[in-house]
Length: 188
Image 1 (tube, rainbow, N blue to C red):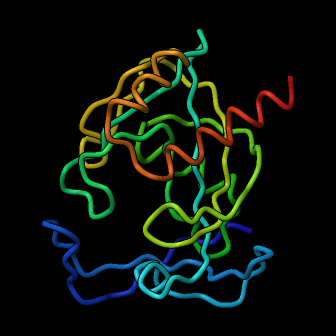
Image 2 (image 1 turned 90 degrees about the vertical axis):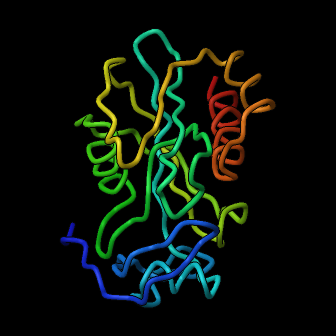
């Protein structure tokens, strides 16, 4: 059952040089087996290091290229860094798949149901979280939300491997993409 995400008022925080306004989304705090143990604000989960859920999608076009984007400078988490995945927090009562589809619509204007691949506990971001990794074939003419995405482009796997060594990417991108490639290799 998918419920409408709820937001709560929180104090204004400062992350690096970015001020984060006073609304915090509610997420489900989960345990080491990905079972719900409560509902908390996402910033509280991050601050306290509590496990919660995040859904991401590796986007490919019809030719197999992978969408890479640079996060907008005004975002509170990893401003200006590149990403291989599109995604965000899973809301209260929301599945990984629904959250991934919602994030694709919000960030890229794409309305598809991504294919769920796997989950793992990711400890490489701001705080530990369960990361649900998905894959979707999307049109190469995406319409990114300029509030979220400063730049985007399509890269082949060799081009992306080179970019991962040369450009600044979010920690989630490195971890999720290496596991994604391992998953695809194991399925071949």
